[in-house]
Length: 312
Image (cartoon, rainbow, N blue to C red; front, side):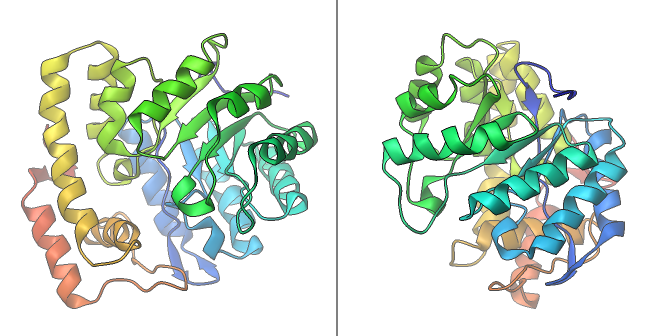
């Protein structure tokens, strides 16, 4: 199992948006521009087909194409992590083999959704899944979307298999994150990564390894700088950068009334900055219309941006 993953994986690994022309057409030109933007911004990996990447709204054909094109564009420069979350273990395994064949470094999996699993069932599911995978796997905690959270001891049990190399937590619960990290203290090679960017600084200060932060699609340098400041325990710099992160969170992600506002706002901002061509959002959602788009434009104008980059 040859990959270019460091153990543990550290830094900022953006969860890429999936640029689309319509529900069944990947915008490859925009994907190329996005990936080059992220690499130039100093990120440490690329995570595709996660929540920000709209995996569950995409056909299997588009998911497969997103893996193929990302790996082609990346050309081995950064580790690529592909999300394989599905209600079908068979489809998860199939997608993992696509990822391995294309040169991805690892896969990511949230619990199967619909019927909520108990903790023993959850552990058994991964004990069945992991041996079938050709790549290392990161567990993905997303309780708001899949109705179940990994108990810290369940993470520890699943990670008895050394192929389980990390954990992404999107619970936005700092106590829980610390509890999982404490449960995994006997695995110094096990990556602890946080999803909500508003918590990246504090999680890294407390021993976490980095962030899978959606805002890094827009301003990768900001989140890389936050990681570096927190890793070096530069508290003054962490506090300064946190203000930018909160400004983005409280403006761009808060236009609209629904849970999809984060995704719509992020894609809209990327299109305004010219990083992607269109902010098409896969069904069942729709992109922002003119009034919301103007609010996103104003939010961007309130940030110190020059030539598409945030001035830090």
